[in-house]
Amino acid sequence: GDAEELAKKHSPTVVGIVEVARWLESKGVQNTIGMNKGGTVAVNGVKATMVHANHSSSFTEADGTIIYLGEPAGYVVEFQNGYKIYHAGDTNVFGDMKIINSLYHPDLALLPIGDHFTMGPHEAAYAIQLLDVAAILPIHHGTFPLLTGTPDALRELTRSQNVEIIALEPGETLD
Image (tube, rainbow, N blue to C red):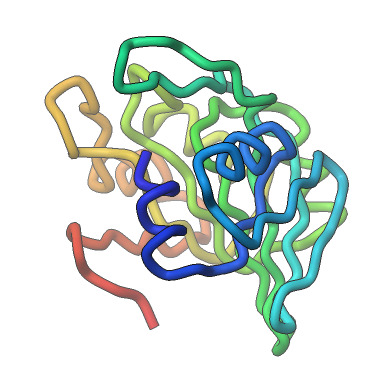
């Protein structure tokens, strides 16, 4: 929701599904790279591969108009040292998470756990099995009342799995 404002303020290279990149360009954002699922782009030595997600994909303009912005997507980001992060974005669990594991072997996965608009802890616990990652950073939870999933609920559901759950407070960073 803040992509346009942040991109105009900081002038980064913005990588996104082609429809979002073109929409941002129409709003005056510079330096976009449109791509699609399966593609990989490199920016400043960091590689981003777009992968599938299972969700809706639209944006509501200030006047209430809903704009279709391409399919939902996640990303596997590989840093120069080989460390890989899978950012699932807004999604439900889906079987192709096993393929993401097989192809990319992420070290850390950012998984939504809020429920209602994304998967909740129950589905995220299953996603962890498919992804077989060492660490999870729960996202998209606790920011408004409908999002009831919690990191503690995810921990409870994954007690028998060998996975670290890294819960951050809003504004907190992870090194």
